[in-house]
Image (cartoon, rainbow, N blue to C red):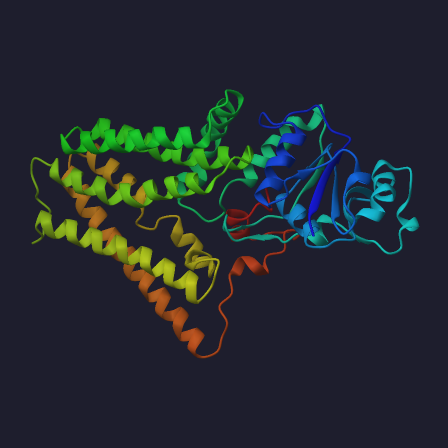
Length: 396
């Protein structure tokens, strides 16, 4: 069975540089829906038709839900705006979407709302965010673009990405979208900054190196947001971006140490030993994350309990460690910065190992591990501080 797609009532309003048709085409291509038609009567019998009003902004989760349920109509309030139907029901469904027929005339259809069709928990973005279905108009263009941008952010991440970068990242993301700059081009520039930062650290030019390093972390935020708001992600881009994220931090610490003119940690620790401890701690932390996600809870260790989500804000990873290096330079002791990174990376990894062991203990007793985000109700009128911090409840 092949799914064919058709758009009606298209809106001229562009969101992040994309028309409603362009956005829907990119979204559906990711879901392997590539057959488009303007004539529903030409769709072969046995295939199905996905009908979408182009004057609405759809959460990707809603379209995925529709594709899984032929015979379903999606409503925004009382207004039908999308349907997935058999070819024989195409004409009636189009009349239903344009308002010339009423829901009562289709007793065999299943009518869904965003709340009943979509899921609130987004595993890949590590957050709870109710699915949206919003009308597109010139009046609410900026609000919709803001909704798309805020929806592109991870809920559980480090404190710099979460609280420092969003506003400037939105400005730069808009510039890129308006000027046809792709996410992979942004990632390529961040790779250049990785190399520049490393060379400057090696030469002992720590201040300039930190400027390049912080610039790279900022662009690392921009490329992901740009990919999501323009629906322009790819497998290559994902691998490219994550490879840079994975490899650059330990290499930076190495060349930072090589660029030191003196090493006076104040404890009996050689520079070589510091490198070894950083690498061991860094790799151990990554392995723990992978084991937890593979065998215990698919959302990941940082989404298990609120403690873990708060700990992710300061875990010994790139951005928190760059704060330590920056602070050490401000007080004129870059060697102490590397020592601080060594200690905090080890402490972070030990905490992660302990949490992994606790998870396996619960698993062995038959207690299922469950992300605390799964129990969050996006409609709660009085969200807790933790819910406001790690979900989109208070933003919309």
